Every structure is written in C-alpha cells, then in structure tokens.
Length: 392
Image 1 (cartoon, rainbow, N blue to C red):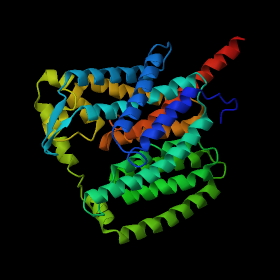
Image 2 (cartoon, rainbow, N blue to C red; image 1 turned 90 degrees about the vertical axis):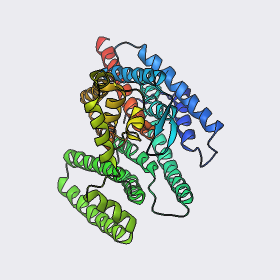
Image 3 (cartoon, rainbow, N blue to C red; image 1 turned 180 degrees about the horizontal axis):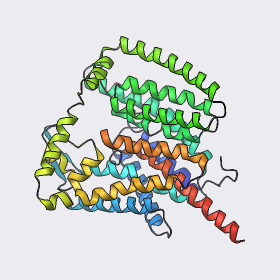
Image 4 (tube, one colour; image 1 turned 30 degrees about the horizontal axis):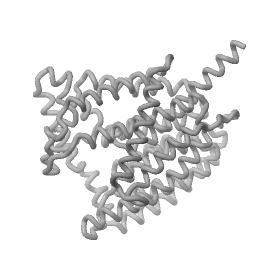
C-alpha cells in the first residue's frame, strides 16, 4: 500500500462512476439513448485525458506507441468502408461497432494514468472500484446468460462471452496485501468460467491463477505451509471440477472438442485470412486492406488481435502493436516490487487473450487497461517525488 495516500479528485469518481454505470446497461436501465449517452460521455472524458497525456513531456514509451496505435486505428476507420458484409453472420454490419469496442477498451487507460500521476487517484479507491465492479459483473453475467437462453428458446447449452470480463478483473487481486481475501474472488471467477463453458475464459483465468500462485509461493517465507495449502485447495477444487464435468454434458462436449482440436471454426478463419494475406499484393501486406476488412475477406472478425491488425492495417502497423507489449514488459521492471504482480497479470491478461480473442478490440478489457494506467501513473508520480526529494 502507498503510505502517503493521494486525495481522490472529483474526476476520479466521475470516471469510475461512468465505467460502473455503463456496465449496468440492460440490467438496471434499458440499452438505447441512455447507454449511448453514458458511453459517449465516458469516451469523451477519456479522449480529453488522452490529449492531456499526449501534451505531457517524458511519457513512458508504452504510452507513445499506444497513442500511435489509437491514431492509426482512427484514421483507418475514417477512410475505410462503414458497412461490411459478413458471409458468416449473413448480414451487413456497421464497422462503427468494432471501432467503439476498440475505443472503449484502450481509452480508459488515460484517465487512470493521468489522475494517478497527478496524485489524484489512489489505490484504496481503485480497490473499492474493483470490489463493486466485480459484484456487478456477477449479476450482469447471469442476466446476460438468461437473455441468451431466452433468445435461443430455452436452450441452456449457451456460452456467454461476458465471462471474459472476469479474465480482465483478476489482475486486481495482485494488489491485495492480505492474500486470503483473494480466495473468494478466485473461486467465483473459476466457477463462472466453467459455468460459461468458454474455453478462452478458462484458459485466461487458469494462466493467471498459475502466475499468481507461483509469485506468491516464490515470495513466501513459509513455502512448506503454503505447499500444503495449495495441495489441499487443488484437491478440493479438482473434486468439484470433476463432479461438474461428469454432471454437465455440454461442458464435457466443449472440453472434448478442445482436445480433438475443434476451435469453433477459428482454425478455418485463420487459414482463410492467412491465405489471403500470403496472396495479396505487397502494398496490402504492408498497409493492410482497411478497417474491419477481415469480415469482408473471411466472413468474421479474426478473433485474434495480431491477425486482425495484420489484415486490416498491415505489417507496418502490427509493429506498433508489438511495441506496446515490448514497452510494457520493460516498464514492468521499473515499478515498485509490491505492484509487479498486478502489473504482470494485467499485461498477461491482454497478451494471452490477444491470441484467441480480442484484447484491444473488446470493451471488456477496459478494466485491465485501467489497472495498467493506474500503476504506470502512480509509478511516474513516485519517481518524480523521489527526484524532487533528492534535489532538496
């Protein structure tokens, strides 16, 4: 914890309030003009802070590359087709929805970064936001699942993409000083990942739980006792998972499909996009085919950030995307040790998901961007304060 707590500003509460309010759309208030208004207000606020961050000197390199990617995506969206035809969905779809997903994911980084850097957004408020938002996500998950079941006329073998939200929430657990308090959150995240039957969600949470456990074990002075606790938890959890597997035919089929290499047509999608890229003219290899062109080419989005950017914006812009991760990994080594677990998990939540889902093109990842923004901004403040104290 930070010993000298910052004073949260009015804008910190406004920002987190808007993020929370938008999460309640559909369940608490109807989607439509109100939810659109909340989303636009949040994005406008985030854009203002992005401009303010851009105007600062001595920015971390990761922010520079993130700003470049935002500018590139915006330009490509503006000059690309606004309607694309999906042979998979068998309908025309607006590319604005895809652009909105991108903006809603990455822009929340900037208020968190700027306010933390100015010492106007503290860790206590961030953790309170996490608890409230996590509880809200539980209710929204069941609401969204119920909507899907109704949509499919009572079929219960449905998979809710909303479960991905928990992949991007568990990195906050790295901030908890009392590790035992994280157990209920881990338990709920694991249970809902299984209930959703989303293989990507189970993989994402499983990878982060493994990382978290290894870090906790490595840092602990009581490794033997911790080994016993881990073993007991593993045995108990395995029993519950096995019972659930045996009692749920749909869950069994999803796991067995994975073992047999059935990836929900993602392999065919990737093959189609890669074949198109390999045969395309050099200009399109370098600069891409236009925003959301993957839908026109293969009938669906790539479900993979790397391939999506490669097809839409080419190799030259894929480099900017890669550099964001490179700079984040470099910056990770500079922050205070007590924050590295959360930072590492947040980066991994985005990196792992980028290969089987969309991390930069899905609003669900906004919470990981908020966490990373806070940690980087807080670190910038601490470094600046140390330099000031050293010069006094």
